[in-house]
Image 1 (cartoon, rainbow, N blue to C red):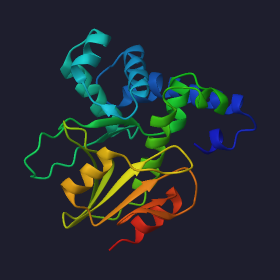
Image 2 (spheres, rainbow, N blue to C red):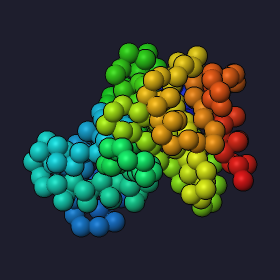
Image 3 (cartoon, rainbow, N blue to C red):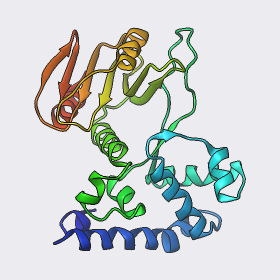
Image 4 (cartoon, one colour):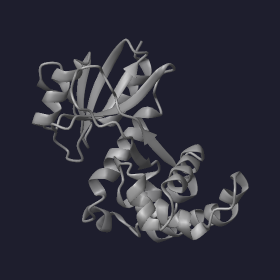
Length: 236
């Protein structure tokens, strides 16, 4: 959204995004399928923003919206088709562990996340519970825009706590494991190490909020978004 990004003030940028949401819901969305109440879709979109990067629980969302699970699934499908929401599927290696098999769901544009939640400037974002998830989704969308052809993106999680924010699968032949941290310095967790043991990726990275690159462990580097995006784009 160049007009929002280049706006003269946070207030103007926020107003542009709020207008975009309203226009999209009231005018554009009805053109793509059966009539869906704009208020219902806005509530769902906002609920997904509150749960940014969470595991999709259509039944829970349906109860909150007083509608059916099938309707919620259809609404989420529509938002995904319109490139407003990303459904990130789990990476499911055959390793004999109990794996989380439901997808994660992100509102793809972090600026729209903030507008849906009424976050109008950086100060409000810094103290908001969604700030970490917003940064994670921003990093994921930035990296996936460089994803090579025939590659796919997933997350990994077991019932025992092993977890990776992003697994890039290069044609089913090799994988890169990626953890995302909002802090300017990176550290690895026990769940990250356990996930590396499970899936044995070719390379592993912890994305952090600066441009510095340095080793954290054997075959694990802390890295900035821009450098990792370049590596993904040129991976063979």
